[in-house]
Image 1 (spheres, rainbow, N blue to C red):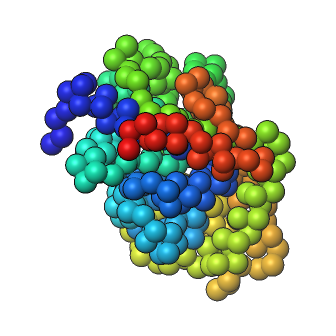
Image 2 (cartoon, one colour):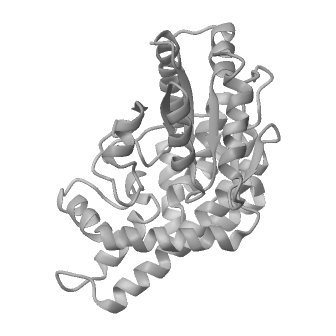
Length: 328
């Protein structure tokens, strides 16, 4: 088990660069550009990339991209298994220490903002899962629907509800469970702790024009469908041990494809079903991007870079030079 003092942790956080942004904002291209200029190892900050066998719908880096620089925390879990923010923080700190011993720089890249929060601010101790309360919530959802529970959460914990989709059963259930067990909103556990430490630059890729991001999201989801997303999900279904309530299968794109296959009466989706999947997948991805941007804007220490502007990459490189150039 990793044991680390605040002094050790502060040194690691100070050496690293953190590159965040919503889906389709250009994080991979920016990370690879940094890898061409600096001796970096990339730590993925993405709750979907951890899963093996989920390549197309997660926009997992290609073999060539993975070979361009060492990558970590990709393909480390079976889709049947969960992976928590606390586990991520522990794994990331261990990897950062190992990377520094090799004389290289940690570059943490991704869009799972809770993972960034867990690493940079730490997580307060939340109550453990309670099977009885979870059963109560599941019964309530069966009777009223998850949107009704989302509305309840919006009354009790507006910040958490704002970043969750009305049908995000897993996260709505957990947020209400924490509220009932502790009497405190889940968002209160995500506030920066007094022990939060300074860290290297958090570079946030944020579009000034939301339409630009929406177009990229649509193009990317259409490309995923063309590359075989439905067949990828079909293969996962055929394993027989996965189900749509698992965190892996609730990832955007996988959930919509799973539901489309549930309604499919033949060996393949009809053109109408395919078109509906396209529209639902794009909409869900837009909602994800909106939640990611909400998270980012709650992080005042970030260096915002307009990813839809021609000089975006130059700005990222300049921020890296200002940080690593003084440490090389």
